Image (cartoon, rainbow, N blue to C red; front, side):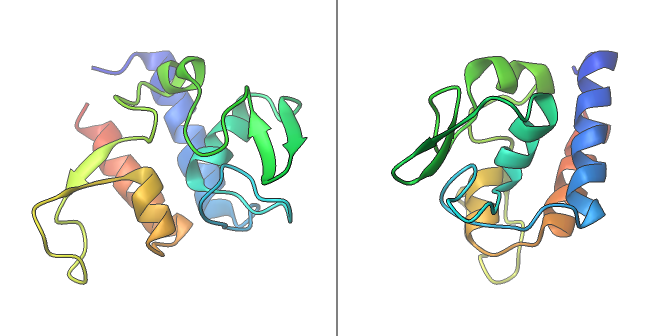
Length: 124
């Protein structure tokens, strides 16, 4: 069960993903051309001064593709690649789990991902 504080963080993430204020990228939390994975947006909202430049783009607390443990805990996500869901899209109707990272990289829009996060939050 999420705490009130975690729900506030998750709500802020949902709003940010729907805002159009972040350009979506893939494979990295933040790319060299300043595009973000949905998990990168989560990091940026906590502290946008923690990004460090590296060969692939940027790292956040030494992570390039998944959430640092402290950020994962702040949002109450069960894993460093976000929440898991099954059979989320008709184009991928298999029994495997999909995480926020894989959904982002598979081409779901930030708005679609925000809907998934909102559903997860309301049920936790």
